[in-house]
Amino acid sequence: MILCGDFFYRGRITDCCVKIENGIIVDVKKDMKGKRVKGVVMPAGIDVHVHFRDFRESYKETIESGSLSALYGGVCLVVDQPNTDPPILDAETYFRRMETAGKKTYVDYSLNLGLTEDNVDEIDEILRIVEEKHYVPAIGEVFLKGKMKVGYDVLKKARCKVEKLITVHAEENDDERSEVRAVEKCLRIGKFHFCHISTAEALTLIYNSNSTSEVTPHHLIFSNRDIKYKVNPPLRDGKVRVELVKRFWMADILASDHAPHTIEEKMDGAPGFPGVETLYPMFFYMVKKGYVKMRDLVEKFVENPAKIFGFKRYGEIDIGKYANFAVFDPKMEKPIKARDLHSKVNWTIYENLMAIFPRDVYIRGEKVLEDRELLIDRGFGNVL
Ligand code: NCD
Ligand code: ZN
Image 1 (cartoon, rainbow, N blue to C red):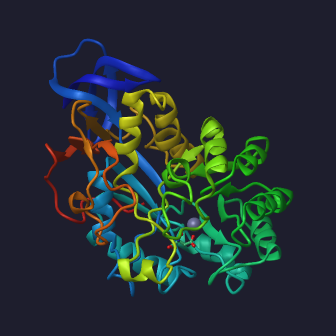
Image 2: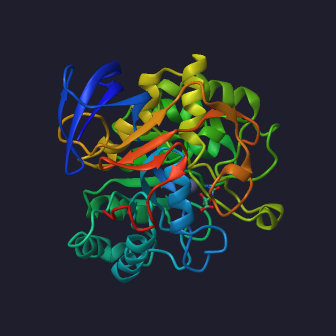
């Protein structure tokens, strides 16, 4: 199959043709005869921080509903987090989760392995067993507070035992200083990937180290005055938010931290916002408006996620990569409405913000969304 159109190719939009065989791009050229795709063909997104719940929390989200939401948002691959109920702390639970995912996921699916005090001594062995069957993107997100909290000693032990990427939720408590302090302490231990960094100071520390950083749309777009619902790390005050926006260029990865809870749970203070479906559409809109550079968006939401988490056939539109595309029509801008989204929780903090949702989505060369209509069944996605 050959598709021609305006592709995001090697850093810019280029009118060219892409030849696809068995889902993989085998040639990119100016002149080939092929089917013309209308719109801007972007590489599909990779969201390295989602909480798809399922198991005993299926009432708030499932792999099925979460991955459908991802697909409608132009995301072709997710990294799910292990703080499920029960959590993913051993090979057996990992395999059980992947079996469910294999039957239910719409997009490609991968899963982090959890770390606690109780499994740290066997973490290398668990990782070895799991990796006989699956590709583990990372150990994490490792919590320094909350139900699955570990101490720095445990983190250090894990860092010494395995080579694998470790992602850290760097916060001991809620204040800004706590994030900076936690990052400093972790950097003294070794190299990590830091989830959802909310302050410019922590971001700068990470930028000047060999570790990597992630930021979320909610910390960039909202301050604690705009949204009263809880999230970890908390939304900061306006000044801190603006400083973070100014240093957006320093961040390696943009990820949603899609963390759905029911409205009732939110009223009770449960932390987290859904966001996997709205990230790419909101940022593509911001690209159109000139607020964000297209190159930065692709770097942080496609290229770096693939590089940092080791997804070899993902991350760009080029020879040897999967033909994973999100096709945007820049004219299709509209306000976000929770009722149009596909997460089980039918609310969003982005209600009425403008966005451009992808019109078509391709996964491994196959059209999975056409004119916003779903063309595939659950289970279409690969588990890694
Ligand atoms: C996360 C969740 O709900 O799983 N929530 C969040 O606010 N980011 C867990 C957490 O990081 O506390
Ligand atoms: Zn988190």
